Each structure stands twice: as structure tokens, then as C-alpha cells.
Length: 579
Ligand code: GLU
Image (tube, rainbow, N blue to C red):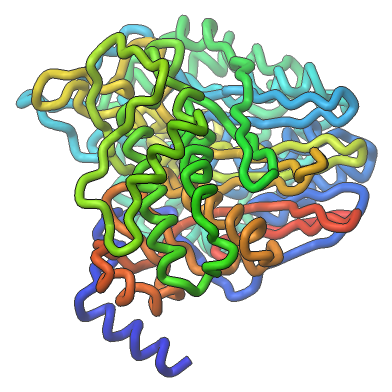
């Protein structure tokens, strides 16, 4: 223990860079506790990022509701108690397993860009990229929210309980009051100035001008209750048409940083069914969210490369294991940054990137003795480029929430939901916050040579995401694991590490979630402070290393011997409940 502490202090002052440099003032902090909260059950299970949301979902499941019903109830509560991360002003990706039909599907509820937006939405007059918060705070970054249309679709296909009933737990809490979490209070530290441009948000979060709402205090949100009542009675469509839509559009357009969102953007919005992307890893079938999320393709690309290495024999405490995982991630991120974007706007190689021969050729680039000098995107067989493209490796500070649910019928839901940065655009309307999801686009549309970036802004397009709601089946095709996380583009690494921990290293799910994060997104190896003893050896090996806190929000369910174990990330407030 003492030695660890000593090494940590040394590193803080010495050679390994601190991770904080990578995310200036990112407010969505990791509020670390030491324990993973777990629950066991054989009938149903829910894990969300907040106890009130978990409880709302549990009650629905207990009354015979489906995973879809439970997710809607939990999500409406999250929009109240964890407003910094997700809500009806944002978007979501859902991967769902329908146990009766044995069918897997996914829903893309990603925000869309205002139809009139140009590729230069986030460039300054000199053609350079705006600063992140210049772009994120205010109307400019707000995309058409997709969450409610996605949940409406899900409920239409998989709901059993009446739509209206699913809003009641959140309405009750909003009217009678909920307990402000210490995490929410902490997230508001240093935020006061960012809310200056929006009076509603400022008064809600900073009733005492400079002092934020306090952890442990009771708080009501009558505006949110009224909004939910309206949507509960009139359906999701009433959010996209009528007074709620008009208020939203007006708020975005009247903001000092004028946004372009219009009522037509709202009425035209559609959640899309997409094929989940599945791939094999050591006999398991791993399914996650396809484009416009880069989650599934990057995760499966990395795992496909790693299949060529015996991580099990090497073990989790072996420097070589982490070197190889880092190198595989670098290769996958090079493909991600070059190719992946909204497939309705850009031709991308998509699952050609998962071709076994291609992945074998990528694995062959990894050397055991040192990191690769130069990592570039590959060209999978069958790929004919329609445009020349350019890398977009931009890294954005994260927000977001993930929930994992299994219902009493065996249906499974994995949903990641987000307003992007913590507190989104910092604009509040009718009791909820609006997203800043458009900052997930490349800020500068072309590279130095004028080649367009796949993930450049275009009217109507959905920004590339990293959200990775994942469902895994064992070699007998039985459900094995449900998992996902918050954490921006680190999400992919967080999920990857837990898949390896459980499948290759036989860790139980609680151990896997608690293990220190080690992530590579292409530029540097990032280590959580608690994993600091690996930092110097990896640095000596030639990897650029950053150490610090990482704001993940993993929730997972692991199936074993007829039992489910639900587990919530110890870095956040999440809980698991099951029966
Ligand atoms: N906007 C990010 C994405 O779609 C999510 C932000 C986060 O996870 O914190 O990938």
C-alpha cells in the first residue's frame, strides 16, 4: 500500500503526464468509492447509474413489465436526478434482445444536425477550430433530440405497460422532490460561469447565484413534471410538435450563440432501426451498436486483432498483455478516426473492417518488443473509396449514462444515453437540459490537403459516437453479459477491458469493473491512478503514458450458472437490483 502511494506521489511530480491535461475543466467527474455495488437474481435484473432510476425500473420489472418498459421509467428518472448526463433533450443508442423471437435489434436515437447547418459550424473566421466550450455552450451545438422517438419505437415493439404509467415515478419525484446527489453537486463546481447565458438553467442549478444546489438537499422540478405529464398523456409526438417543440426551438435560436435548429428539424426527426454489429471473440458472440456509433466496429476490430494473441496465458499482470491491447486499440482507432461516420451520408467500409483476413494482417503489424512507430488506417479487401478521406482524432470531454436490464421474460436491453458533455449545451427548457451532441463532429471539415473528413458536419447528419451498448452471447448462444459505459471515446476501451477481463482472465464482474482502467485511443496510453504501478514499466517500454482519474460509468450484468450478477461502476453512484 505504502509503496503504491509512494509511486503515485512520485508519478504525480515526475515523468508520467497527468491525465487531467487531456480534458481541461471536464465537469463530469469520477466520484470514486471503493466498492462495486452488486445484486444477484435469477428472474430479472437492472443496473443504472442512479439508485432512484434503478428502483423505478425494478418496480416495473417486478410488476411484469419488460426491459423496454423498465428502461423508459429509469430514463425519465435519470433526466431528473442525473440531469448532467442524459435526458429527453439528448439522444440514445439501444441494443435489444427479444427472447421470444430470439431476435436482436438496435435503435439509433442519435441527434441530427439542423438541416441548414454548414460544414463550418465549428470553425472560426480564420478557418481554425473553435475552442471546445466556445462551441459546446449555447445554441450552436444543439442537435435534434432523439431519445423520445427512440423510446417510442422501443415501446411500440417491446412495451407491455401503458406508456403513461412509465412516466409516473419520475413525475412523482419531480413534484415531491428528490435528493440531490453529491456527485451532481461536485459536477457543478466551477460551472457557474458556464450557465450565465441561460437564466432557467442558472436559477435551477445555482439558486443562490454562486452557490450550487447541495448534495443531500431536496429538490423539486415542477417544469420537468409538467413536461413529462404532457408527454405521458400525448405521446412522444407531442415533444416534436406543438408547444414543447416551439419552446425548444425558440430557446436554441434566441441563445447568444444562436443555434439553427428549426421546427422542421423537430417534426422530421426519426429514430432509425439499425442492424446491430456482431463479431466473434474466443467463441463468444459480441453484439453492439453500429454506425453512426463507432462503438461496435472499433470494439470488434480490436478484439479481432487480439484473437491472434494468447492473452489468457499471458495474464492480466503481464506488461506484454497491456502492450498488445494498447497496440490493437491503436490500430482500431486509426480505422475509426479515418472511416467511421453516419453511414447515411458517407460511404464507409463498415463490417469490411471486421474481415478475419484483414484483422490478421493488422495483428501482424504488432511487434512484441516495442510500440509501432507509425499507426495508420488500413484498407480492407473489397473497399473502394468514393472520396479521399482524412483522420479525425478529436477527443471531447465526456458526459453520458448507461443502463443494463434483463426482464422476467429473458429480454435484454443495453442502452447508452447522453446529452454529450456534462450539462450538455447548458441550456434548460421546460425543466430539462439540451444536448451539445453536435460537438461530436470534426470541428474542421477538411485536413491540410483539403481532404474531407468522414465525420464533418452536414445538414441532417448524425455525429459519430463512441457509445457501445453491448450484449454478449456464450459459445452455446446463451446470454452471457450485458455491458456499456459513459466516458466519451474511452467508452470503447472501458468495455473492451471488461470483456477481456471476464472472458480471458476469468475475473468476476465486480472485480472486472473495479480494476484500474487502462485505455489507448490512438495517441497515449491512459491509466487510472489506482493502476499506476503499470505506468513506469509501460513508459519504459516506449509508450507515452498519462495517469489520472477517468469518468467511466459502467453498468453490467453477467450470467453464470443460471444466476445473474448485476454490477455498477464504483466510480459513480450506480446501483444494481434484481430478484
Ligand atoms: N457524445 C459521446 C459519444 O457519443 C458520449 C459522451 C460520453 O460518453 O461521455 O460518444
